Image (cartoon, rainbow over all chains, first blue to last red; front, side):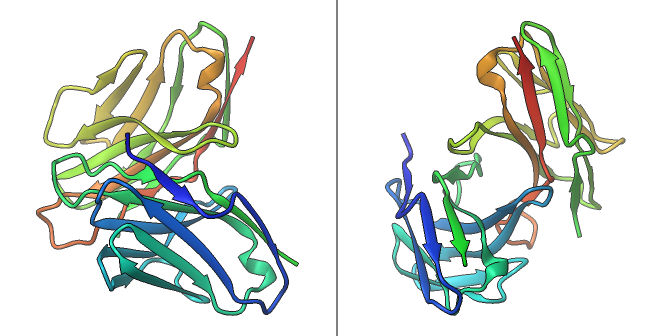
Length: 114
Length: 118
């Protein structure tokens, strides 16, 4: 089974702190994604990566950056956390081909910025 | 740009009965994929069912089936014999064909919370 893990289930940070959210997948997937989930808004894509060191902005990249130094690991960075970044963050991965295009999700990190 | 709309923020159904969740989408593409994902409380998002737009036959996975109406751009999910474990947020998602010059994004609806009454 595909396994996507995220470094923390719950995180509380202070305004202005630099925050790192880590995601690791064990299925050698090429694509990895970071989403933000807010009630009534569904999932909004922050960044995705289709290869090591490659990244593309999603719909809401402002205030975020990402890093993918290894294929299995995709990190989301909040350079200076703000209260409006309080949210659930979901990481996902998918294979480049194979006809499935299914995205496999991690358990999520609920981040609270105070 | 493609959009996905789930007009029902919340639905409830009696255990063992059938419920249908609605999803509409807007696209100018002719080839694409549609998905229903399930997110149980405090658990990971998982794929429920997938439909390729070029296939006329509606996808089915055990108690889950879809009613795919391409012309109407409608993609509803029917859950038969509802069980307590079906309680979750359900999200509809759209993906462009891999042959299109597009990225790897899924376009998501806002979700429908399904409540199962015992």
